Image (cartoon, rainbow, N blue to C red; front, side):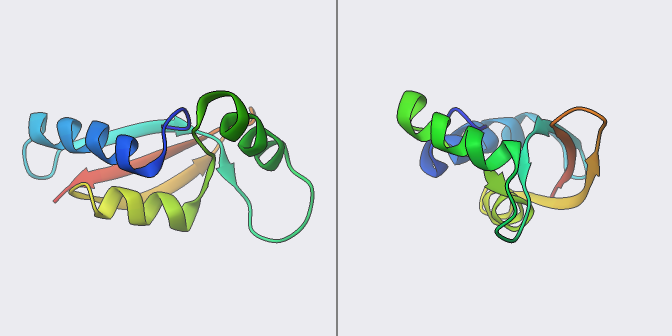
Amino acid sequence: MHDWPDERAATILRSCRAALPDGGRLLLVENVVPAGNEPSFGKWLDLLMLVYAGGRERSADEFRDLLATSGFEMKQVIPTAANVCVIEAVAT
């Protein structure tokens, strides 16, 4: 999703939603920007995505909103040892 601005990302997610039954699960592997002003890889990547691809990195709240507008309920964000998280969402 990070390659796309919100409108395009929502279009992709709505297509995913159309392919899933109610209660179907969607897993996204994405960088989740932490809150606050501390430096993070996700904040640096956010700048790169904006400049090179027109996309953006998102916070957990921004993912929650994007998923909600696309027919999903975000259930959890699972950190990994890498610079990404697994975002679990359920089709509503």
